[in-house]
Length: 255
Ligand SMILES: [Zn+2]
Image 1 (cartoon, rainbow, N blue to C red):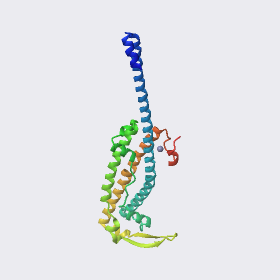
Image 2 (image 1 turned 180 degrees about the horizontal axis):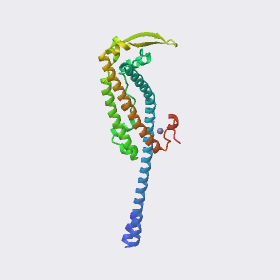
Image 3 (image 1 turned 30 degrees about the vertical axis):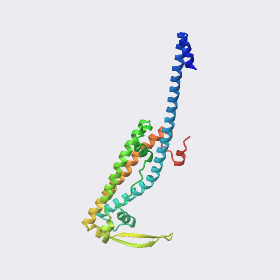
Image 4 (image 1 turned 180 degrees about the vertical axis):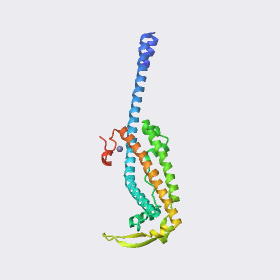
């Protein structure tokens, strides 16, 4: 239609009409391009929000798992430090309480804390990290992931260096079976404080385990927690959520 009008105007040497038709064609192309560009921007924005929501959910799942582990290991470390004081102090207590003794027996054992960030891992694996256009969130996510990988190897190295005190030095422990008030059986562990204090190899292994457990609690647990919290706060801000929102269900359905 436009082409036939242009060719007729050319034939009639009507240059004004030719010019107007050209302007109409160019304007049409420019407007079409702008609309498609705007649609792309809107679609990218929706995609980014969806990714941030998924990342937020990953962080909530991690929070939940890690919030349960952290107090357990803080408590274990507390008991092991109490035991170390009793073992090395010049004025020892008369014996080790059962709970403290059980802590000593478990001092070598720490699990890999939950640390998966599947949304970020998937974006990196597929080379689409630029879909998160918020610079602060993207950089914090990348540095958290890097730190997470380092923390994994630190935990593995610490874990491999720990000694099961009960397996390596069984002569200092006495095991017995007891029935709890709810009818379930459990193993009671008792420690011979005097023989432990007199055994340099046992003391050395205890010091080693205490150091390993302290490092585990301070780096793969607490330090990584701090970075995850920072990332969570950035994602909250990007999604317009209040930082420190209490419940997972409330956070998952932002208004
Ligand atoms: Zn949140």
